Length: 389
Image 1 (cartoon, one colour):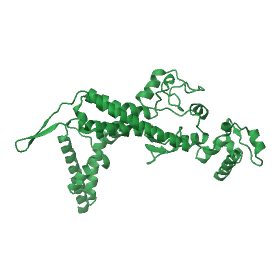
Image 2 (image 1 turned 45 degrees about the vertical axis):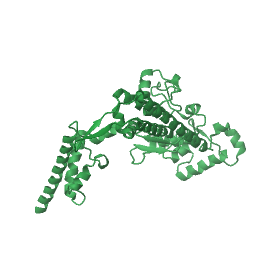
Image 3 (image 1 turned 120 degrees about the vertical axis):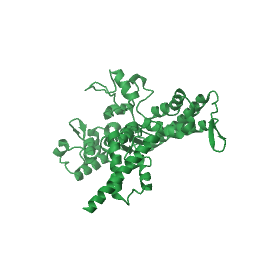
Image 4 (image 1 turned 90 degrees about the vertical axis):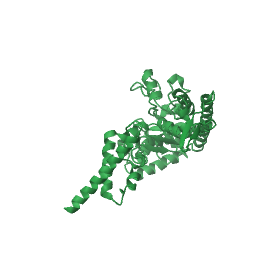
């Protein structure tokens, strides 16, 4: 009984101390309100503060009590979820990276000036490099190559066309959504070097890969539809071109800000320090925006060149029979002893075999042909490859 009382007392002590710490944090906050996340990496030193107060892994019951208090506050305020909501798009993360890199010098500009600098150094170059829209494809409202319009008519043969202009523009330029990939034949018209192998791999990555933590929040591939490396953050694409634009714009903008005269800190009396504001030279906004924008464009150009080099080097050497212009009859005359590739309910046999090996299916069309085990599917895949060697 005494043991239970002791545990209860330790739990309450940890709980109360955590509540007290959170109250003190709110007291020193300029807004009087501070969100309290229970996740250690975003809790802003809360657990370190508890450790200094003697509450840590060596006092597990107190730590449980303190953690419970933070979890309750977190759930009640949606503190951790607000963090996710705030940074669930690459552009929001890019803005935060630039804000941290630019530092206090940006506070010397007014809101409109800060907006102009951010737009030139991050907003426009990074946004245009993410691949969610194609600024050169004006006729199709910025639709990225290889991807369908979000509001194409259901059942339409060509999903590159849309009759709903306003929702399409909102989806692409405001919400930052790329859209779904087109079917292979149509996507290949947009991307001539697209192969079925690359397309199949990318579709598997896009819809089946669960990423690092199994939730699909962060995942990557070495080959997207264009044959370039791609990272997806909460479903939104980030490539080397966008990363280069962010790095170039941030570094150049930071360097430009450092050239501006700084405020002067003067000491009055023995200990009182007073900051004397030094006016910014005329044209400072244009200067920082121009230098930052130039750096972003240079970074984007470097990223694009690397992308092109990777895509050129990694082009598949296994094109389909259609890409070679070879028919089944020609293959039959060229190869003896191997059944030519068949078309099953409108789908090439090779596509269904690859899909089955990657976990799709089952496909009754293949099972009817006796391709009903991984070993048989792999053997058939090797046969189809041999047909095209």
